[in-house]
Image (cartoon, rainbow, N blue to C red; front, side, top):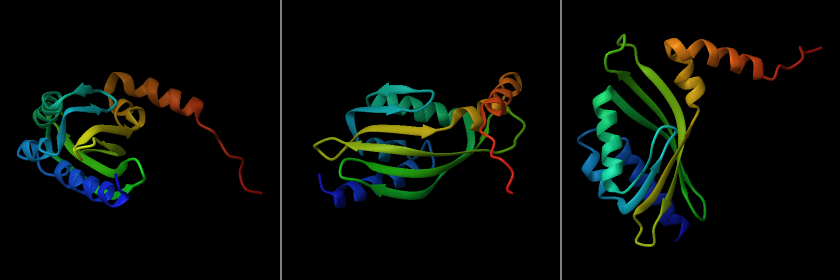
Length: 152
């Protein structure tokens, strides 16, 4: 596959993924291979129906969900999308939560997306905010953090 296709295909996928959900589900699935694999810190599903289930679940658990695409790039084998996700969890205090991450996109020979692999820090961006898990996660992160010496 050419780098031009990888970049153009990744841009199309990014635009579809950034569409409002659940209305954007069908256009996104049209770009997905029948056996697409979608992987993120919480999900590892295969097939269009698996991806549909993840997107429907996200739509049901979140209001005002929005992906802002920050950057799109491609190498000789994959596409990459850097994004910012903002949403309000249903049943929470109404405050928006925000995550930043990156997706690695692999294409099948028929130029449909065969693998969407999300990379984002669930510990600092999610777990540290939760009432029960937050305190130990924040303590563990602080204990493992590298400190730099003060400037001379």
